[in-house]
Image (cartoon, rainbow, N blue to C red):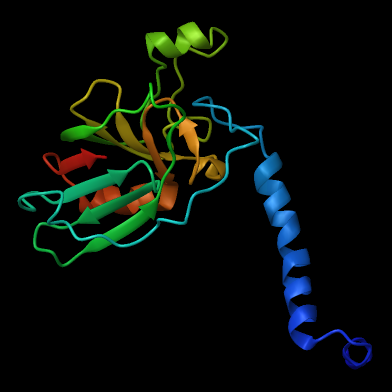
Amino acid sequence: MAKLLSSGVSRRAFLAGSAAALGAPAVAQSMNSAATTEMEGDISQSVRRNISSFRTLHWQPYFSNLNNGAVLVDTQSRALHFWSEDQSVYKLYPTSVPMTEELTRRGRTSVVQKIVGPEWRPTPSMLERNPDWPSYVGPGPDNPLGTHALYLSWTYYRIHGTHDTRKIGRRSSNGCIGLYNEHIQELFGLTKVGTQVLLI
């Protein structure tokens, strides 16, 4: 390194160049991982993870109270926020969000059912778009809903886990909100039937 520095390359330039070179494989991998093990949606090669607006938020602009706790899903920053009813717990998780605006639903809903080891059945519109998909997948490592699912009052909409961790931080679902399995397991324990949910 002393030889490099003596030949006119500054230490700062050397370190910056080394960091860029080390980061290149990760960027290339995230840009080229188009294959997916989940049936929920293919990952586009041109889609990048969005962490620029991943920041903490306060609940007051979004909810009038925290009765039963509150979940805010920000589809732009691809983040899920949770506040407990007594304000002692605040969690922030990265998510996957719907692939297109047409598949994205926004507004107020609530958790109506909680299931460990959910079953998965594609919606009629999913089967129409993807006729080769199975009509049913039981609980387990091949299930697109991961290990836990929070069912919302809107038909077919859920907050659930995923076994394909490449989906998190991307537009990759057919309407649902996905989390890492360890995050949905934690959120599952924090929420209850009746927890408020707002998608923006």
